[in-house]
Amino acid sequence: MDDKNSPPSLSSLADRVKRARGGGKGSLNKDLEPGLPNSAIGVAFRVGVEMVAGVVVGAAIGYGLDQWLGTTPWMLIVFFFLGAAGGMMNVYRAATGQGLSVGYTKDADGVGPTGSKQADGESPDGGNKEG
Image (cartoon, rainbow, N blue to C red; front, side, top):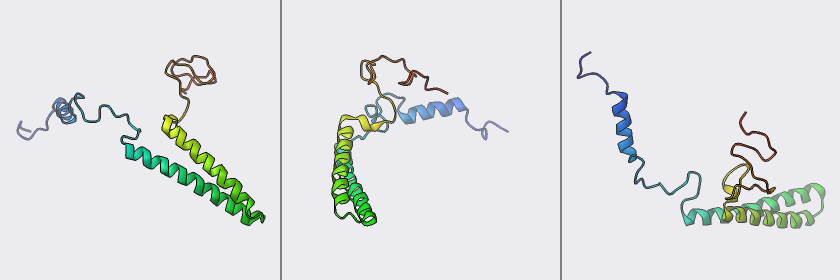
């Protein structure tokens, strides 16, 4: 092959990708963390959906149990309030940022919920998370 038809080298490709991404400096999304809602309308929509979903699911479960057990309207009332309470709990967790990640979280000072400090990569029961 001659030089005219040869493919560009991988180092030049890496340089072009860096330039296209902005080189990591001055990018538009530098202050946004992945997985977090990035606008107030997104948070408001999530809060509304959490409340409505909790009430609807609770009422549906209660209605279904009432039809099955013949206890109309008691299960509907009980599960309506349980669904509303669950929806409010989810809204609180969304507002405080607790519902955005799965698993064990530490406070800013590295103290877990039991008050004991834990090393990175260690689970709350003292075992290691990896393998």
